[in-house]
Length: 124
Image (cartoon, rainbow, N blue to C red; front, side, top):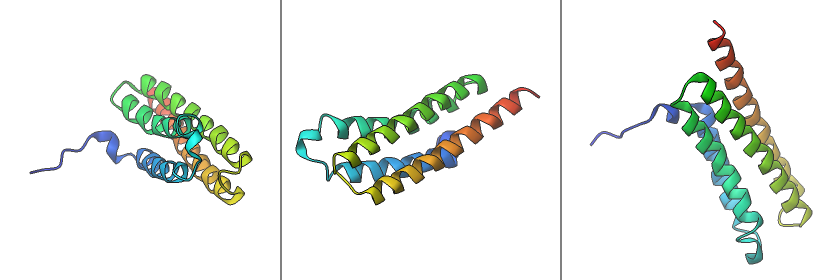
């Protein structure tokens, strides 16, 4: 049986977002049980939201896709705050916070580049 693939699954930014989700889930496993429905839930939801917005917007017009990419960027920023809070609460090290931030910077740049591409594409 042939594996059905959706167009957005070929986007590098979408696949990077999936890798980031894996990292966040693994990281949140070490959080205290008291955070299960608090910070850990917020962090994983924000991370998943990045990929969801990329996927959801990709099937729409370029203008709408751009709007969804902006929401994905907003979720990237939300993840920055979650990571900062977790570090400040000593749920993980400054090194891990830095690694998470590097991944978020990369995602942010990829999303912004895609937005710029869509804007130049619609202006021609």
